[in-house]
Amino acid sequence: MDDQEVLDSGNGGRGARWVVVAAGVFVVLLAAVTAWPRTAGMRSADSPTSSAATPTPSVPASAVVTARAVTPGIWIGVERADEDRLPRLETLLPDKLSLNGATPLSTAPMAQALALFQRGGKGDPGPVLALGDDGGLRELDNIELASVTDGHNEQSALDDTALSPDGRMAAFPQRDEVVVVDLTDATSRRWPVPGFNEIVSWRPDGVTLVVEQQEAVYLVDSETGRVSRAPYPGFGTVAGGEPGTDLYRLHTPSSQVAELTRWDTSGTLLSRMRPRLAVGTGEWWGTGWLRGGRIAGDVFGAGGPRPYADVIEAEVIVVLDAETGQLAAGLVLPGIDRWKGCCQVMGWYDEDTVLFASRGRPSRLLAWRVSRGELLRVADLPDNAMVALGDLRRG
Image 1: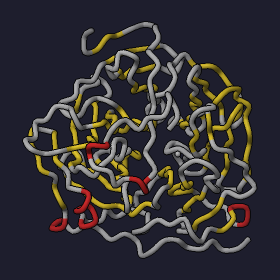
Image 2: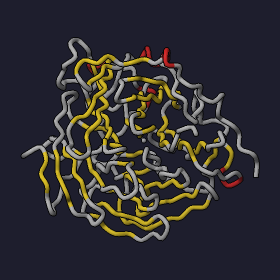
Image 3: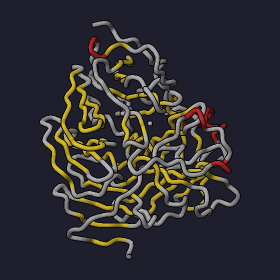
Image 4: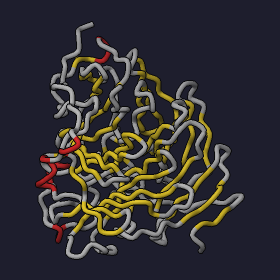
């Protein structure tokens, strides 16, 4: 097949989706960096109590840490042990994110959320928490959310795509329904969507939800509950983008060759591309994120091409050109203490900065300025927690 095949119609193959492993177990050597998959689609009136510390300071130019460039567009990052010494990126987040000190959302609604949290792992994951743009932490009380399961695997209801683009709404997959929560007034709606709903993501219009199951994908109007079946293959929806953009899917069909497909709003398949990576194995993890015509995602690195001498890597963050599907940049994350799926992309901070989670103990939210290879530390993440991010920019 050519690098890009332009089509009038057709169907892409079913992909597989993976989740970040619970943070407390990231102590195994690279010899144990074997697959940690779940099955396809399974991935984990009072004033609010402030959980925010001093606002994040600006980054002095002299403090910036630049990754080592080994070939054009390919950078080598820092070891995990050196991440806490990275300079801070100024965002609306505090230096350390906590799951403690939450106020009920019903008594203190927020204008918008900066982030959502829920403890990962099996069993009762606990409530979903929202960090408001005022620095207050709220618990989504009076909202019953069960763990998501297909009968074999279990995960928390919160995924990294739960927040709407404006941070005012949150959506959660449930068996036979989707729950939509308005964070500005603490109300919720439950829209019927029959089946094992596993992933819910927002389209850039801030209204349409993409609800993914292993056997079907549905588009749901979050305001009216109107449901229509989409022709897309199950799993792999690329999140983010701007209003009016086409829908992209990044997945690995049974051939184990990654495909990037592009669909218009009517459900017509416009193109199918097979990205060629100079780094990593091409085994994709978590969600791909679109911004400014580029898609950022996490791929397993060990065993892939190595144009970087003696560096031992476990994970690579890659950026693809959305029009051609080809590699635009790559950040190799070295270290034998990283797990497969450790470094999930969490979105874009701006059009040149990718946010990603470096999971371990502690877990950290990091930023990579793609064009310059700069690495920055954003915040410490709660251990063993699923996270969804909103707009973190200041001003």
